[in-house]
Length: 344
Image 1 (cartoon, helix red, strand yellow):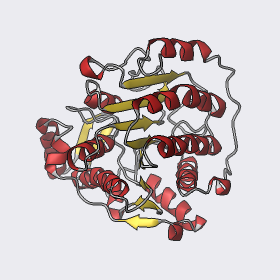
Image 2 (cartoon, helix red, strand yellow):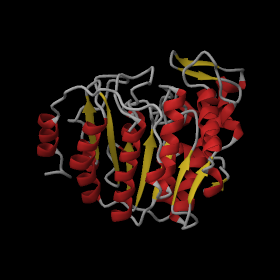
Image 3 (spheres, one colour):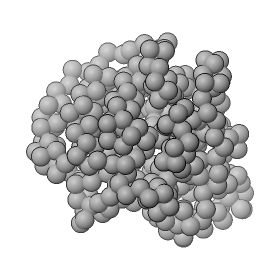
Image 4 (spheres, one colour):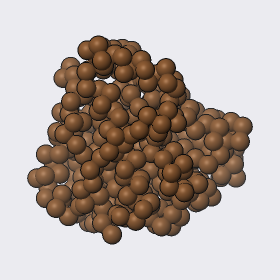
């Protein structure tokens, strides 16, 4: 089975050239994928629209209506970070449906794994609030589609975007059947994601936050993924893994103070692919989140696709590495391992 990608020109319609999350991001990714000649090696799947029932499964109707009305009346700002243009609701609905379609294809055996090249991003959208550039939480919609329509009972969501996915965490915080794992810069926007945030009620222990200091680079990321993420995912034993794949931990990103490289992202992808092979028959879907240096974003996506198709030796990193801070993460790793139910 092949690796699939999903994209649509309509994702370019949600656009404000003065905003860091604009259509140039996806254009840069597509140019790089086309010039690399990887696309003929992949299966292209057409996105579909998410249904209203699928969106309401994770978002409050009032939130949906507010965004719809703003788009209908010409657009504006939902808050200082998050814009709406007339096409935004259509685009966000298609983006959520694209990730759901990727999940359907992977679970249904059409393809081995898939990458949904969507925008705007989604992981900050909470049950009741669109925020942080995000209108609909695409991975949450897709996770619910997997559980409610496809017979999947346990889903793991791994989020390596530099910003904590507060929306995804909020949606599944008390849900014992969805494991949310986030490695993120802390303290940083949106200010959530302390390692003591473990979930609540029946969902206690199905949230794993790994807050990282500024200037964390490749070696430290690999360390926490090997010692914390892999162990937790193995214990949880999901039937599907969805990745919120942001590339703003790259050292060139203008919105984040981290030190990852393209090679480092490829290594994270290798670790997650190996986990998927081990625990859920390779069922893995990536959904694009952040990343605001155009070249780092594009090369990061290409590197991830090379890993998904089983060709990590073809990963290229024209941007190179950046000096990592000398960080001692062992006390934090030990503290998380002591208190987290999936690690004790």
